[in-house]
Image (cartoon, rainbow, N blue to C red; front, side, top):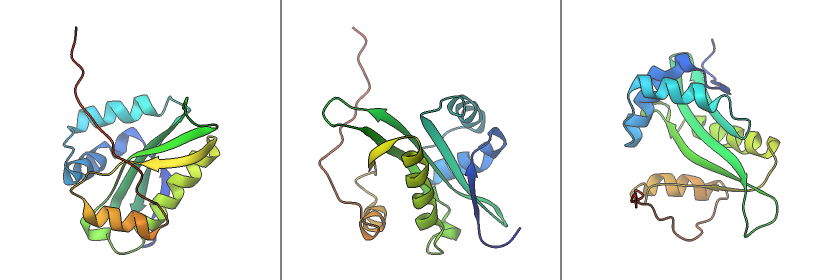
Length: 147
């Protein structure tokens, strides 16, 4: 394999590398859980998980989905997670992985794209802004209460 990464659909056997990447991002997920999630998400036509695979193995991963929303026409594509290994940052992998995700979501019908990024990740925010993404509002989160 050349040094240039290949961008492809994630497979369950990518679970060890994806688990490490998610942990690096601050979302620790045990390998068996990641393996099961990759298998489940692969069955959903509105969802996509891509990896960037280089000579040293998987160096990036991104996940997203498309969904219609009530308040806008068309279909919204959302990138819910994107991570590149520290060793591959600054090499163009992130830019190409983001473009691959944008293309994959557009191919599933997305007419608008959005992504989420932790407030603490100023470097990621600058990365997205340099690639033409703009900040739009806030995202709130909580664990649902069972009533």
